Image (cartoon, rainbow, N blue to C red; front, top):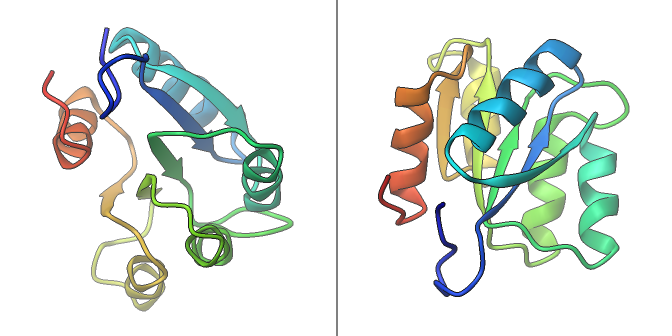
Length: 131
């Protein structure tokens, strides 16, 4: 089990992706690392869940989603004062203009899909967790 930064509670993650297969893969991968997680289908749902008072140590954010994309959602979360580690997970090349805009929106990390255990470990190290 991984602990959050305050070391007394279990780490919580939010998966933000409109693709059901990716939702399941990311949910299970996080579970396999002992990380509790919630899944939402777009950026607006990610904003709404934060407005309801929930807190997450890590947010895995897809870039291309309906309703509100990951770039807009990341900007809004940062504007709301959310300091969770936000990792962009997308099929776009890390060299694309869209990806640069995504990173500049406030990402702490960016990984190309598919998310693998090794990529998740890399993200977790950025959250100051050791697996």
